[in-house]
Structures are given as structure tokens and as C-alpha cells.
Image (cartoon, rainbow, N blue to C red):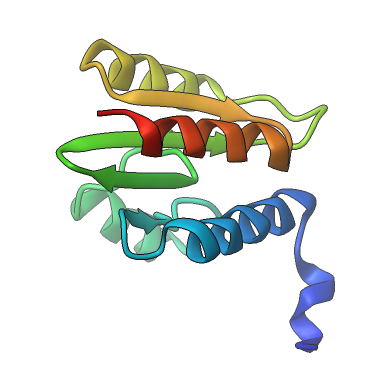
Length: 119
């Protein structure tokens, strides 16, 4: 196993589980991606990210299927979405996109399965 695994947090591990579920179940049926919005950056990296259009609050997972979009933020309790994450999720809902927070693998799986079954 990779020696960097010890540096991963609980939410990283949850996201990896969700990603593996997607690959196993829906690989060729939708797009699934992570926007690397988290982490520490140098002042230049912060400037460049904002300059190129990065905004705070982008959820961990974005899925696209048949002109529909799912935004999924993953948290492990007691963590909660930040104010900017809540604002982004609410704005996505206003456009009628799926927009959720999941705290466990089972919650994330259910949200993804329901999204994939939507017409």
C-alpha cells in the first residue's frame, strides 16, 4: 500500500470509497469528477486559482448524466458544510440540480443511485 495513505483524512477515505463505488457500478453511464478545491496553497497558487475561476464552496463530487448534474459534498461527523459550501449547494438547488451532503458511504450511495435512476 502507498506510504502516503497515513496522511489521508476520514473524508478522503470516504470519498475514495464513493469513487470506487461509482467506478464499479456506473463507470460508463455518467461522468464523475472531483474538483481539487481543498488544501493549502502558496499566495501565488491562491491568486492563480481565483484568477482562473476557482470559487469557494465547490462540492467534493460532481456527476453529470444526460444533461443533469449532481453536486455531492461529503462530510464525516462532526464536520459540517462551510458557509460557502451551503451557499453553493443552495444555488445549485435553485437551478434544479441535485445538491446534497452525505455523512456516510450508505448515504452517498443512496444519493448516487437515486440520481442515476432519475429520467
